[in-house]
Length: 456
Ligand code: ADP
Ligand code: MG
Image 1: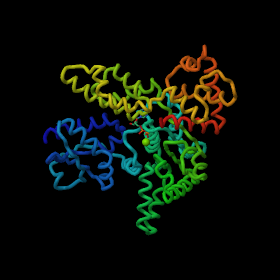
Image 2: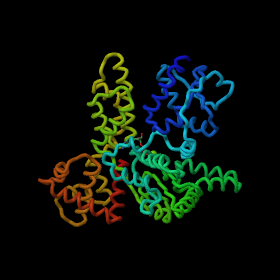
Image 3: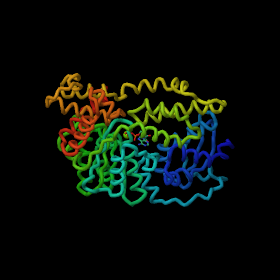
Image 4: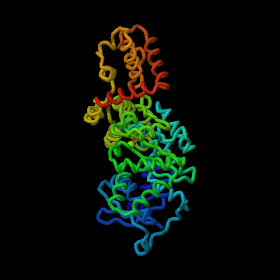
C-alpha cells in the first residue's frame, strides 16, 4: 500500500494530535516507528532497534490508535501488528534519521504503564481546582507525609485516572523516581498468578517489583476490597512503601469511610494522608472540557450543539466526550456533503445517550430525597419553615448540596424553600462549607448523602 507509506509521517502526526499523546511519549514511542508492509489489510509496523518489552507496550497501548487512523484514512478496516527489527524484512527501508531517544526515559515510561493520553496540560481545571492543585503538589513533591497516601475518590468518568496518570507523567519527566501505575484488577491478577505458581521465587519477584518503586499509583481500589489474599498483599505493599516514605496514590469510587468490607486498619491507613473528592464539573467547566476536547479534531461541532451537550450530560466527562464524538462524526459527514449539522439533527443523534444520562442528572428534588431519606425525615419538613433542631441541619445540607451538585443559583434555592431572599441560603451554605473542614462526622454524612443521590 503505497498510500500508507506516503502518508506514514502524517498518520503518526494524526495519532499524536487526535489521541492527545504527550510530546515526550510521541517522541519515544511513535516517531521512530516505520511502516513495513501491508498484506490482506494487516499493516505491519517496524520498531527499529526494539526490544520485546517495547513490542508488548506498543501492542497494548498503540494498536488501536494506528488501526483507527489507518482505517479511517483508507475507509476500510485494517488491523495492525508491530514487529521487532528483522534483518530481511527491513532490508531496503531507508532508516529515517530518527532523533536519538533517551533510553532511560523510555524505560521509565514503559515500566510505569501509564496511559499516554493523560497529563496535566490537557486537564481542564474548572471547578476541580482543589483536586488539580493537590495532585500537582504531589507530583512536585512526592512522598510528603501530609499528602501520603493521596486518596482520590468520586464518581465514574470524573477524571480520577486522568489526574493520577498526570502525576505519574510529571514525576517521570522531571525526576529519576520509579513510578508504577496499576489497576487494582491487574494487581489482583498478579497476586493470584504468583500464588498459583506456588513457588517462593514468583512471590518474591512480585514483592520486589512493588517494593522497589518510589511512586505507586493504584487505580480503582474498590475492586480488591473483600478479596482477602489480594487485600492482604496490598496492605503489606502499602505499609512497606509508606514506611519508606514512598508516595502512594489511590483512586476509588467512594470515600474510605463508605467502602464496605474495608477493614479498620486499612481505612485508617487510607485516610492517613490526604483525601480528595472529584467534583462534578459545573456548566462552565463542562463547556471548557468540550472546547479542549474539540482541539483534537479537524471539524468543530457548532457552539449551540456543544452547549446542548454540556447542559444535558452533567455527571460523567467520559460520556460528555463520547457524545461529542458521536456528533462530530455526523457533523463531519454533513460538512463533506456541503451541509451544516443543526441542533435538531444533533438531538436526534444523541437521543439515546442523553436519555440514558438523565437518571443521573442531579436535581434539587433528588437532593431533597437523598437528604430526607438519609436523615429519616419528611421532605416537606425540610422545605417548611419549621425551626426544630433536627430539621435545621438537614435543611442546610440540602442548601449546600444544591449549591455544589447543581447549577441552581442561591435565589433559586431560596425559592425552593419559599424564602424571599437568599441570605439564609448563603448563610446555610457557608455554615456547612466551614463546618465540614473541621467536622469529620458531618463530612462523612454529606458524603453518604451524595453517594445515595448518585444511585438514583
Ligand atoms: P475516572 O477515572 O474518574 O472514571 P477518567 O480519568 O478516566 O475518569 O476520565 C474520563 C475521561 O474524561 C477521560 O478521557 C479524561 O481525559 C476526561 N476528563 C475528565 N475530567 C477531565 C477534565 N477536567 N479535563 C479534561 N478531560 C477530563
Ligand atoms: Mg478511572
